[in-house]
Image 1 (cartoon, helix red, strand yellow):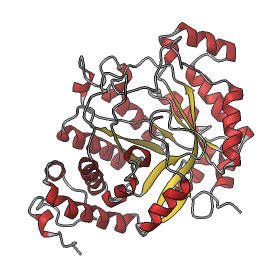
Image 2 (cartoon, one colour):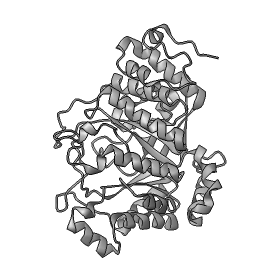
Image 3 (spheres, one colour):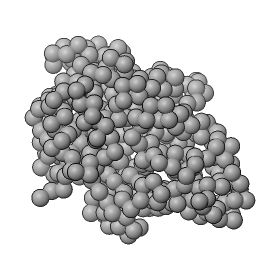
Length: 399
């Protein structure tokens, strides 16, 4: 039965005749993103209706450690302070011993995810990175990442989740043997942002076609995959919708996208976009609600630390996941924005009427599918995943 659309919303988006069931169209999504503030409460209500139908009652998060395997990167995005050139103050590639020291500390704090983030193929630009890799005994950054994922599996109870940037289909397959899920932020499908002076000027690995190819290759291999959009970096609202449509189309084709992140740009001192305007609360909430209505059954995530101190408002936009939150390591991508304390996250989530559950880096609904295709995976990974997951596919509760 069709859901009744509130009057303020129906006057703006007459196509929303079945809120919470059928994905809204591009035209409706664009109209909603441009709607006036007085429509926002009705739009948020529609998103909440959709979430209640497909993702009722539970908000998830992943208790993680953040491992910046290397912050050397060949891309120069206009908003990034994570990447460094070789030889710059703060440039660093973690050694295996450093990786495992953080892993063991995370184990003691109940973490289940080892998130690997790193610059994209830095050895192609920096001879210093090639020297480091030779010293460690590896041919490339991806070879080193693969070895560290396997080391985490063999020597700890944590599950790796790598975000290594662009990868070939062969590398996707190789990493899928040592990690139950992977990620690559699409960010935007707007090729305009590769132009001189735009956010992705001098960032060849942010070419949307290359990133879409990786996500599609992961779909062909049925790898549980995380992706998302970065809003406020110069894209138009129509381009924002088109990026969500590109993700939706890939999900409809392959069914492998486990979550869509809606991340808001935050300006950082010392970057070319240091004085760029940030998305405001209303823009973020509108985008979250539109993402929910475009993909009603999807896991929609928004990072709480990038909306502090009012991050609980994000729940009103229809999200059902907080993403990775660490009790140990900072957000090395946004170090100026600390994670909320897990007790505070639980308290604010429960105050909105939801149960907070810890998940693994691979979502519960993908656990069964993973087991069914386990013959294509390393036995060690299969055993580690079976030990980490409870009967419902969430992280096992501490005894």
